[in-house]
Length: 233
Image (cartoon, one colour):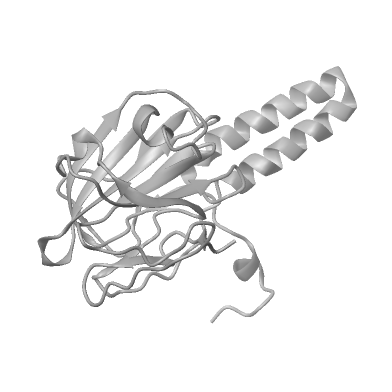
């Protein structure tokens, strides 16, 4: 058992995808330091930020298969019916959609919102608008996942690149059975995730609410569907 205050309870793991960037940031800091010493400290601060950006803390995900959890850390930016991206093949009717916006200080490792079989992974090239904008869901570069959840219900999750983000990374392949809260990808450096729910499912969060990847329940696939009203902020 880990004691409070021990190094293992304080240090947060860094995702391996971040190691090359951390090394580059530090190397640039050293070079700048040779040019002018104060620039080294600026570069070192940026290196520390880069390390912080790629942190990958463990999460405790509910094991109930019918729960839909947030795929990312951030703020619930939008809740409204939206036509899913064509590449998800979820039809052309609007489905309940929850959009969570990540800023550059949030954890950017994304997790599956539901356990189940991964049926589709599709990459769509696009623009790099501010990810908090409504039209970013349609126009920005994105990577989409279609998951067959409990009872055969289909859930879509879309990683959307943002104004600063220039790379979406996927960790999983089609056919894989995803465990609750399993890591599915990462976006560099500031972005958004949209979750498309089955028709009739009501989101269990409010706009402005903070969400934690793999832990915050954003909907339930079965049981009573009670609409929420208002904003969390």
